[in-house]
Image 1: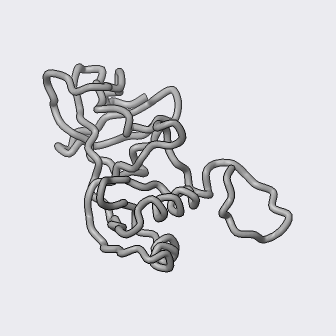
Image 2: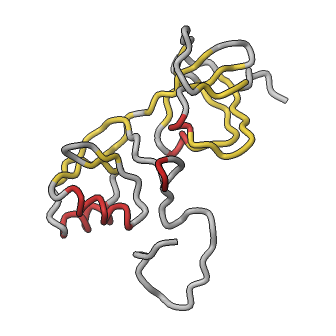
Length: 164
């Protein structure tokens, strides 16, 4: 048992009143059960029925009626420009989360992916900002990297350029 107020429900849209915010990076916005602190220093408990991608929700309503906005934290990102459709295809083929915009792609810093993109002629620049990548298949969920929660039995060494 905890004395922290629990989340009553997830909010899909902004309520009339907002009492605070919780700032979470991309990885932290995928959760089931966790103690969190608001930006104002107040603790609360998230205890969801299943692992949930919080990118699809506006915020939390706590048992005491408090409404908290979920805000993406600034992260170390890489801005990618060049032949965007081709570069986006290669990023997706590596199961790498990617934020797709009209004039650029944003990925989290990853020296292996950056080396591949450089070989493909991409221009890159480091920056800091919130990371809100595209959802998984059919526009929702998460794109998981190669270490995505299930085991493979590999009879031989090979590249991981395949679909699952």
